[in-house]
Length: 233
Image 1 (cartoon, rainbow, N blue to C red):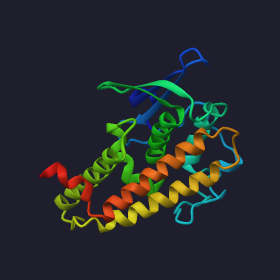
Image 2 (image 1 turned 30 degrees about the horizontal axis):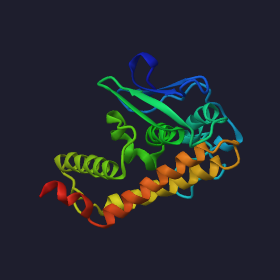
Image 3 (image 1 turned 90 degrees about the vertical axis):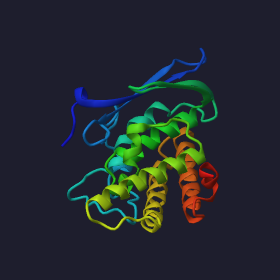
């Protein structure tokens, strides 16, 4: 069931270009009870948003039931916003959530990367559902180490709930490795959809950064989280 705007958790991104171009605001709305993102303003159907256009090889959805790729449709509105921008241009980026605000001077592609990450996780793609709990506690501009920590701790909390429900928890992270492989495939599938749709490199570069983070997380899991052990000594 979709949420209405009045019952949504909001994440606001503001890009201050320090007089070089008009500032922009972007509002991400997430259903409070299901954490599914509402499509951004400006999202609309294109050839590249149709489910069967460069469809991911692991996609379980059917075009007879779902017309558009849920991630691509949501990202269509975002693609328009950054269509005339250069990825490495700087901006003062402010992120407001209910609990606090974050601010950092960074490249546009890094801000776009954070927004894309939210929509990748919360648009309703079954293979990205593993990432969805983290959007409620969104951390913009997260480092590789922070991303690995959040990803694994979120997964292990889910395994605790699985244990309470009488299921065998995946403490060895074997299932997590397989699910991370699927996340990587979805990232690459969305990148293929984005190729050639816009003269801007912001969206493509933001996806490349996201995919790099995903690969680093996978390597961290395969390495038995060696880089995080120092936290518990």
